Length: 228
Image 1 (cartoon, rainbow, N blue to C red):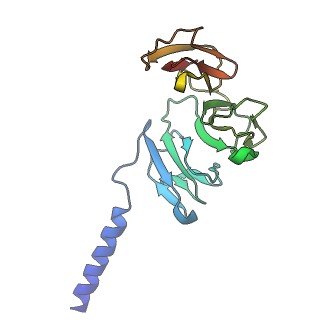
Image 2 (image 1 turned 120 degrees about the horizontal axis):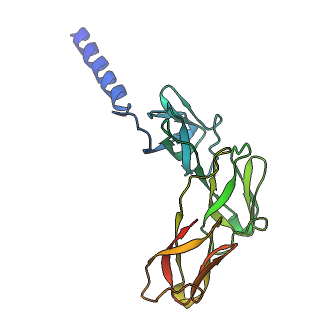
């Protein structure tokens, strides 16, 4: 009887352990969210043979490669409170990137740690009302992105050798209450309107445009823009 109970207990333990293992590892191109709870190390199964990119940091604690996250035979691992989304590159990927959110609380300066190693950084999307302007309210250090003066944004870190992935980035910008608004982002070449979302007609030069600080809209214009 005791042997039967012991066998049942062992089978139950085996089933619990098996349930914690994902049925299949994420393949190239799939995005996987991996979270370290209570500062513990957590594994998330991925096909990591072609490399893995951190595409979006979700935690306030930093996610620095080989310190807070990394890759081994089991897939991607995170620890020390790192919470982020990862994507397996695949053998043909040429440029890696990831996005980190950094914000200036109550107008104070803040440093967000990130392992740059010479990689380029650009403002992907301004999330605050106070403007995010390079050299004024945000910038880059040796292994950090810093923000100040109330700037809150998502910053894209490109590949040190290949730069940023090709193609435009989509940005939605809205003029609320007929008030002019600037949606901060880094513009390398040009901006064009993809889809108008407001009843008010959006006409370039009259109620929308762009400059070195980002895309601006006015007089009720709301639209989706492609940023080159």
